[in-house]
Image (cartoon, rainbow, N blue to C red; front, top):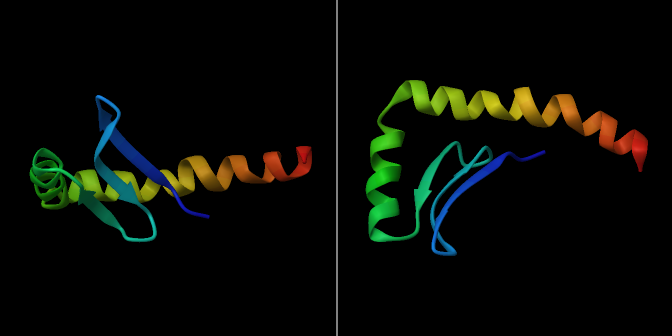
Length: 67
């Protein structure tokens, strides 16, 4: 299971957090700056890493039962 949160502007992906990578990755100039700032903030990183357990691991069993 992988948690991904992407940030878009005008249909262009700026920044993405992936739980398998464990950090933010920027795809544009602004996205790289945002990713660098967010990766240097331990509270933001720990919050995003916890989202996999909070969201994915609690909701996936329900979806598999429904399928």
